[in-house]
Length: 478
Image (cartoon, rainbow, N blue to C red; front, side, top):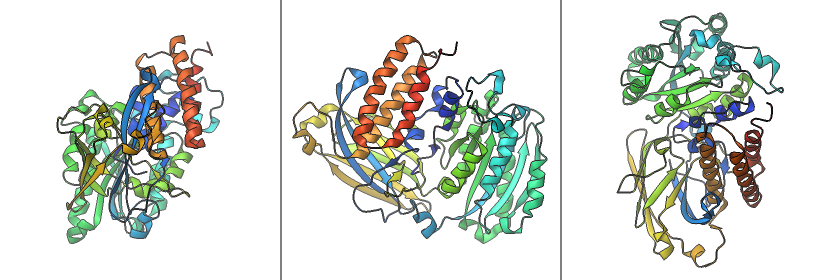
């Protein structure tokens, strides 16, 4: 996925619904959902670090009495997308695994916190495993993606830490002994996430000292596997949130891997607004291995920082798809959107790009037909700044002068459908129950979604129909 840090997917949201739990609102973000889908690319493939293209739309909102809305859909692509990451190569990794072995990791992957799944179709094998066992299996899938010259280290933590593997080149590590150590791990004490992270960073820093002049060739990253049951202090400046911000300024980044259906997505969302950070969740060890085989290089390779998007000549009302703006409202008078990190993304057989879409809701003044400017800037990983300016207008769709919806391309139409879906789900989850009034609204929205899905021609959108149907089943089992 062309990811802007933040959530790589909404696996945790889907897992909760699949096991008949009402998901937390924080488990489904605009950014996370967009990262799960492919979008068509207009024009030639990018030959730059980043290429920005913009398409416009005028569309009535079925959730707001068919009020007419104006959007600009911004698509970010890169020469590192798809096979580009293999052709151009990712940097070597100086990577440390930090694995949570606290007592809560000994609870069932599915039935944690004494909740009981009502889904009779659960995979019996995964149902019998605890979260630590799932994490250990996932970890092996992750290490399978390392290259011989990558550097690897590992620690485990509860309320103290233990060194499992000192940092050194992957090719020089005895994998059999490493996996034997991992297999023997058992859940034990409390949870001190900040301690685990500090020790992981220390391992990276010690290894950097040994590298001397070679250190600039490496990307430094802590991959933090946890069920994310934090103390309240982890949100503080000295907790995991504050530490991740501090060390990102030293080019040491964090990837959070959430284990189980009940991990703290609120903490994950907060941390991954930090430079270089992202998170994903583990639904099953086998699924995680497949994700790593497909997306590992994208997840660990930032290609740009400090992406800024600004308009001149029109007011931005809301932004959707940036982890830095999940509340969507633009409070800045200068219409400036800041995105801390850009990662490359996958391409499918149609050369569509995964993720990379930001939807801007614009003021109705664009209906006057006056062009406006979209100005973007970003820095590459060496700090060099790039600036681009485009002139955007709605003239071709304004000239149609009718009451129908109009989209300049399917990328815009699909992106707008997805952000409306997330907004709708947030409204349902705000009530913390799925009553009959909610079910009536779900059926109405489902009808709209199916209509748009047909117009877009993407059957993969059907997975959201499955999710809506699961909402409709709440209460039926009682």
